[in-house]
Image (cartoon, rainbow, N blue to C red; front, side, top):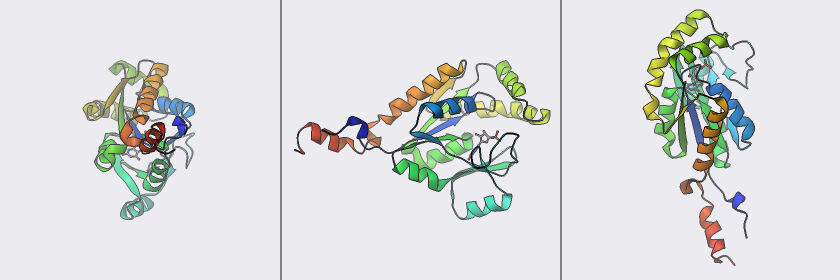
Length: 214
Ligand code: 5GP
């Protein structure tokens, strides 16, 4: 009898979006530690690296010329301009992971989520993370202190616009407590992995259960 853990499935694309400062990065990091079958899609960007960011881990930091070339060559699954910089999701690693039954986590803005929805609706599981309050969002943006004040002000101004997009996502997590939010996102992932349409190996498994292979 085959092992239910080995039922073949296609990987899914887990998209997390939020306004800057809602806690998405912390939630993503913890989720990646808990879930060995989940890996982060590393985006390419034209923005300069922040202190502590590592090329190839946080982003692929590339020039505008290289970005343009990748757009021309259709090497991005989606791309968008956010805060005057360009961001894009390299296509090849995502397609390889999904085909191998591995899940991919995306930290993209609402434009990226929209484009992914248009291109890959059946593979997509989308979650929007909201902060518990406006004051808390502001406090978190200041506490991060990696960006100059004018960048923080710009992000606050943008936050309401981003948050008004919540309705385009399937799941909404309000990040009051990080542990709780990680638990909620992990629960969504666990349930979505069990959706029968993603589990190409089910047919054979049930046939074996019914003794049709023996
Ligand atoms: P940051 O510069 O703070 O790392 O990211 C700014 C915004 O760009 C965030 O909302 C983040 O989700 C978004 N972003 C990062 N990578 C991508 C990407 O590959 N595609 C899109 N559409 N947005 C991205």
